[in-house]
Image (cartoon, rainbow, N blue to C red; front, side):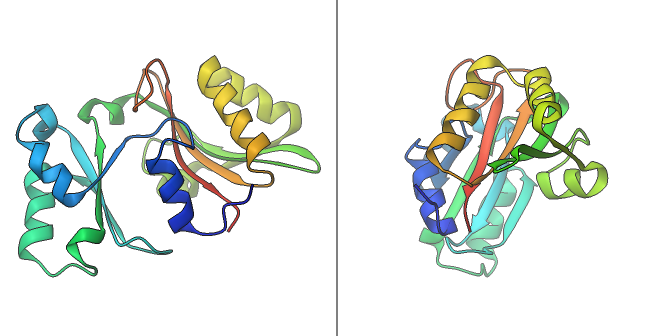
Amino acid sequence: MRITCKTQMYDLLRRDKLGNHYLWEDYTTWKAQVWSTEFTMNTYGVRFGKGLGAPWRYHLKALQVMDICETKSIPCRLEDVTVVTIPIHVARCQLLNGELVRNELGLYLYYSTYPDIMRISLEKGGVEVTGLRAKYVLEKYIDDSSLDCLYDLLDEYTDAVIEFTVYSEDVGVIPRRSTIIWEVRNY
């Protein structure tokens, strides 16, 4: 199967078809429950729109999300705003950001251990490895269940790039997983 656009990928991600991820909710659903739980202690990522290139804001607190969405002009309709819940503790336990693909030469991994969001992490410390070196890095950092998931995604989405972050403890919506899948893409 091929994932040909970001809208398709996000739809699959939200339907739990692409492995472990953080909780993604539309703004209205998120707002209705944010005050009823410990969510106010977390940080959030907000995506403004559903299409390719839709802008993101990162490292926001709950009140900042509401302020931006309700009092400032946003670059999309409110129903197209997605809020990603990122537990507050995960920043200190991030181990690796990476992009993985399997091509005719085998595994190709572009990764960084610089602790930041994916783009910045890869810009500041990106390393390219292939073949057995890529496999060694993956096995060194990723728990067995998460690694099986990555390999399953590579089998199902041939030639796709898988963007992921590895943590030193369990994260996301699937229990006992230390890896978050951000994107699976052929576009």
